[in-house]
Length: 418
Ligand SMILES: C[S@@+](CC[C@H](N)C(=O)[O-])C[C@H]1O[C@@H](n2cnc3c(N)ncnc32)[C@H](O)[C@@H]1O
Image (cartoon, rainbow, N blue to C red; front, side, top):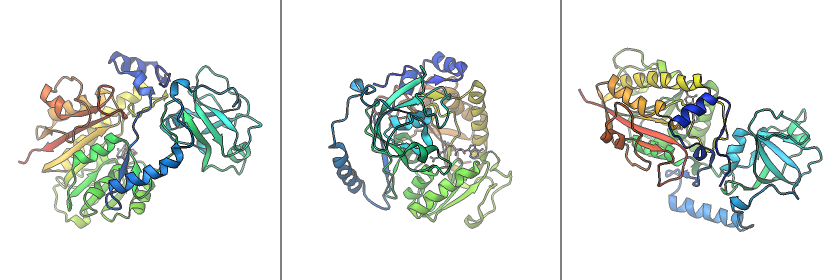
């Protein structure tokens, strides 16, 4: 078991808010025990891909037995240390290798292929390029790795900024270090994100809006389920994340997705619909879409393992405001009878249950539909939600007994036909 009792909170107020609601902070620090790939069924079958992964791992896992996390301690023999940032540390605990950008410190004298002890700096105080041992009571041991890049390659003037710098051999989380096996055939994606698009249940030839789409993991899943037939409008406000969606579309060779750098809080133009499918672009007219996915910007307080929380109380307060604005736009843009899926990768009730209760109170034409397939647990108690409604929602959090995955929340609404 990974031994941090709580992530390192830069903002004690946020820590207080989470512990007041009895959120299990130890759970947040631990890596999920399952890793999932979404198989692209337009390119291969689940059986074929399973066989491919089995063969691939046969070679890798036969190298040696995976050490149990309890027995894994910093090795004295492997004296040299590598320090990475908290974000990179979390990825390492989920089985990633260390890319050049993630390395903060490498001791002088570290040679190519040396086996090193790897730590994460939670304080943010370790400077990039540090060449002496970084001492801190806030550095946590992650595991051991083999050095594939030297100091001059990492930190020199013409330093390589891409590629694997340290190949992880084992980690304290017990998750095998196999890196990311994503290809056009399958994408590394958390289980609740896969479930979320299944809940949306897109159909061939529909017009669908993905309001906050980058990097496009769910957009490409929607296109796959529609067999690339129909129209998907994918928006994201962050201009430099648009390229990530476009890259994925190219890789998967989809034709049904149009991407726009656009602020989805302004995606409704206030007018009635009179457009044909060919000229649909933002801002949109009322009642344009059959289905809308609102995978909302959120605090991300579900993306386990979380080693460092930089969210401030002010930031935490700001998310529900934008989430409500996005819902208002979505409701206007949805056709009567259409469905809206709202999701976050956060475990806070203010971004989840309270948003659902608010949406139902605000929009009398919205009602909840059961978010099937249900793979998480029921929603937490919240004023404005009945017992029955709590059961229609799904939440992935410590109480979701079936699957040990990241924290997530899914709600499905339908707009009542007039
Ligand atoms: C949770 S991520 C989306 C992940 C994506 N759905 C996927 O599965 O790959 C939230 C996204 O919302 C975007 N975003 C934030 N505010 C936005 C806004 N006002 N309009 C559109 N996108 C926004 C962020 O840039 C970020 O890419």
